[in-house]
Length: 326
Length: 292
Image (tube, rainbow over all chains, first blue to last red):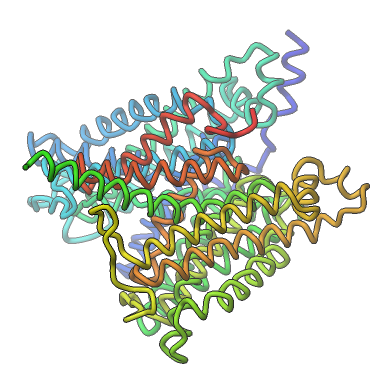
């Protein structure tokens, strides 16, 4: 057993100081009370959302090393589940949120079972194929609104209906709550046996197998956790925009953006998705705001050039940069 | 009478699918050449197709050059774009993790698509009255001239690429680098040059497909999205790096897409393609002709 522990220790996560966390959290809680501009609250909600989605992806793609380019599917399934439960049966989006997570988790299990035998690019392209298929199916599925989507019924604002019209602040706190949840969960996984197994599978699947780790089973666990949490965020996404259509939640571009966040910040690190979202989302929002209006496309040119630069010069992401400095 | 009509429509549809299949095959061959030599998927491949189509469009609108005449120019240009992409971008991520490689070419995709929006806007363009136009009838099946030329051209080029890789000394050198870079360099093969060549060749293939396509297909910034996706699926379906695999898979996808669209419904035609891919790789994780 000692041998196993020693080998597993090689996959231990690097330690990061924990003093900043409570201070940061306090700042984030105070933020909407201090900053009253709706745009900045909106921007922070997006940063939270993508930090959250990036972290959920990170569990599967970063820690376990299974690169999914179809994670938007889980977000979309979660969003549709809670939307339909509310519109058809009047179920509170809070329950819909959990249900959406479970649906996404079940779907993750269904696609994980056959595709986890595939390696590298074959797996990545399979996840694209799944995503595109689901997009096409929802586009032609009239029962759930088809391509034109569903405009949510507007009800008086309440926590029960998760609809708020006078202020964005409640959405801000829901998003912050989700972020705290996923970072706590990821932190717990990092330190647990599960996390060691995940990293072992990523670093060296054959060595992991020889240690007696059932790699397929743990890949499935990783997929289920990742899909469940991605699905949860679907409810917030749709409650915030009060509209849903397939192009909004199932597009390949969204899947790519979800994994771009941890890639930029640092794949397989706890803080990577937070750093990635904090940099990427403001850049993307500002370039769209300032450059998108007068010259459509310029924002994408800048964005694309930035992605190429990071990939070519800093493949370990910003976290890799910080770690080298420290 | 009704039965005859159905058969006629089916044959017509199958022929159309076959013609598309060869074009898909040529696009996919370009992608598989690059992958086969260096294990990198160019996610901007569909956008290279888009750039080639706009190249033909620009030469046509400003200088009245028919796509048939601009073909060599655009192909030479895209060969250069491919080599430059390798030199400036890909050579830096050769030994990087797969994610960095994915995002290097993904950044290029976003960049090119943004540039297309910036320069040409979102409008649908087309080349009006190219030399290749109209249609003819063969055994009762109507075929469009530019589409047949595109398919035949795709077939010929795919054959040429296969011949080049399998039968020429440079082709053997490409295979040697793909097999074992270090051993190849000990034999005096310059891997940098071979990698550049693979990118040039792969981009030239997609350029030919793009120019032939511009004779009869709309040109817009997102035109590469579906063609690119189909090419990834075709390449993985055929087995990464296999030229014959890409050819076979391209044709299968063309026929399946058009026939499936006709029999089940046009909105499901891509779903059928993706399901075929999933079914095949689940049974054969390295594709139809991939090396295990």
